[in-house]
Image (cartoon, rainbow, N blue to C red):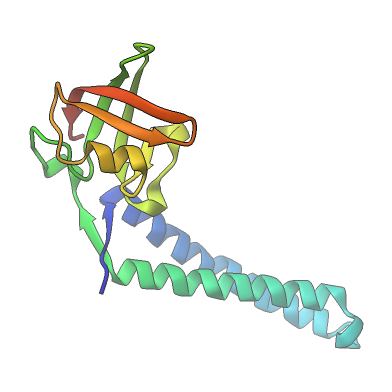
Length: 157
């Protein structure tokens, strides 16, 4: 079975979403379906069909979260130390053409948010960084073409 690596923060966020779905959203949608049923003919009841569709989405998301959490490999990044880039590392890189600096933390797929500086372990730039050290250069083939970066800092925080 495939394990899903994630940070402790990412794991907590998924657990919080699951709790919200089970304790708040699921009961609300059950109530909405019940109210919509009382309005009569179900074949022409848009309110009922919308509520059933939302219920299907909620139940699907609950199953997905339960599966991911059961297969989670939770990694406490604050306890890691390494000179090389691994999962959880925050890596500062500089574009060798523009001298523009960027910092990214390598996280699990469900935690990734580029706007917050978190990239998925499966992203091309993350795959290129894994196993490298400060001073190493990497080349990333991106949709906009090939880009070269130099690693200037690796930290675990």
